[in-house]
Image 1 (tube, rainbow, N blue to C red):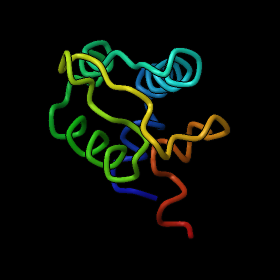
Image 2: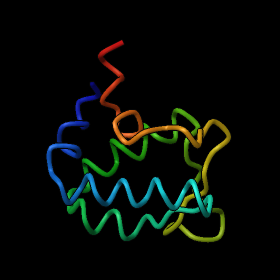
Image 3: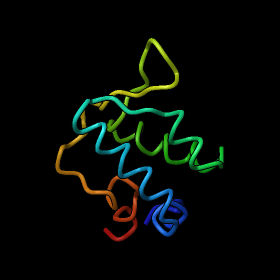
Length: 92
């Protein structure tokens, strides 16, 4: 498990926000960063998870606005919440 996974998944509001973000990436191929950052309320946590997603090619910052991201080239439609939040990372 990535260090930050529990800090997201163990808090229902954060988990629900990431679930909604993931759903938007699946359906619209676009995610609202501002809404997620507001719910996280923790800049360090946000930076960790955002770097995690970018390093895996799951999200790409939108060139027209820092408030949005696009689904990246390695984003998969079948990705579940736990994988997206890094829970499986250290279990492998």
